[in-house]
Image (cartoon, rainbow, N blue to C red; front, side):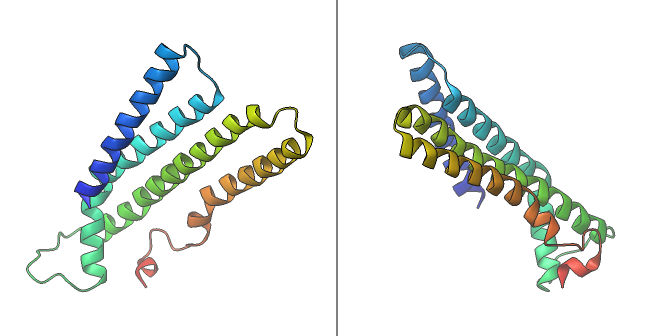
Length: 158
């Protein structure tokens, strides 16, 4: 998992740097779609940093306990606190990844805004899609937290 996500993240880095170079140096312009992509890249970077540095070891240990695959593992005495910390940090990671996905969507919307300017039916459609995506952004940001009311309890593993 570490290798595949790191490899894809490096591809994102290369694509983001190449795009930024082309937009800023070659085309000498910066627009809203570039800003949304920069936000998406920052959210993705934060999510992966939190996941790799804080959450991944807690995840493997929590899942081993949850599925009863602890033979050969000496469990630390604070395993319950480790599980609670995992629940907290995986929520941070999930929300940041959702914000990254939605920022890419808004980048496309910002790009298409200029393309549909002056075409009334498409402009109306653009507004409908934009408002719908704002709702999806809000819903997706809170749904994982609302759907699981058992934070910091052992009921979460049931």
